[in-house]
Image (cartoon, rainbow, N blue to C red; front, side, top):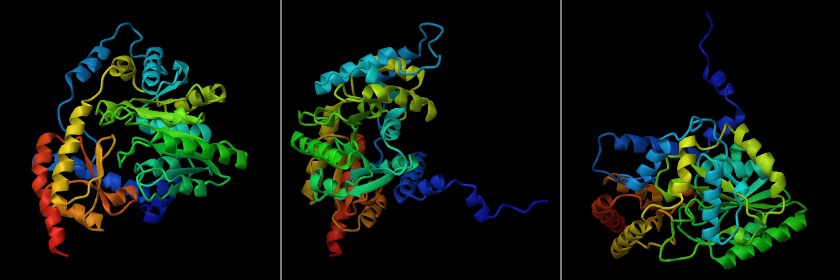
Length: 404
């Protein structure tokens, strides 16, 4: 009879890569929040959940009907293997051209299982293990796991404001730099980076590429590029820097993150995209067949014709900003996305968010985004949750003031 496997033996059975990913603090915290969110949903209807960008109302009839129509087979190959479907690529390219006034071509759209896979595909297309990837804080909290899983090195840049810090990015570039990630509209801040900053970043990357003798690529995470408030115009880095790979997700546009569909797009200005095409399609298979399911590919041309109610999100933003501002919170106005990123009334953002939890309100602490002293509120909470949460937010800030 063999001895039971010891803890050390079990640990040795895990790859170094898997162990490294599991040990990332942000990854551990996100997993814990997912578990907690699931438990909260089990029979607890009185809570106010402002954590993940999940829906808290029934989906729109048009979205449901679009999926239902796509489920009806039109021929015997309807649910056969699907790669980059022609109709889906054409619809995505046309939509991008309308949004950005850039003539994207269908053959440069690579369909993926959501934005996660599109970013991972971009990284593995242009970067080799050991290459460095620069991104700014506060980040989407899953950049680091995606970068490490690809064998790359994350390089984090602090910013004094919610804008891109061009000088700090310049200081972080080395001969090993291969990718800079830009997320606009930004999660968690809601900031849309203006053309002036994107132009300066493009000039920096051109100069740095020439200096190091190696092309630095820009990966533009544009999951929220249709979620824009106040009539603002969204500008993409592809308008300024030819060597940009654009990652997009329909899960935000339709508030349906469980329906995994997105794409990676190469702009027509990218000089070496002809050579990239076979590499990208090879990676789509080798990474685990990361094409969207057939149903979502069939639905995509219709999904491109509408979105969630952005005006409703803007009204929720304004309601919360007005209410929280009246209580004494300082609330920066987001240009887009689902979120408010609010300075905590006390430097210990985790303690403050715990005080909200005790009152039945759940938000994300800024430490999850590697910027302590803030907390994030998701605007996908419904109106009833918002109204029920206001007394808790007021009681929490009053408690902070009473302790001073």
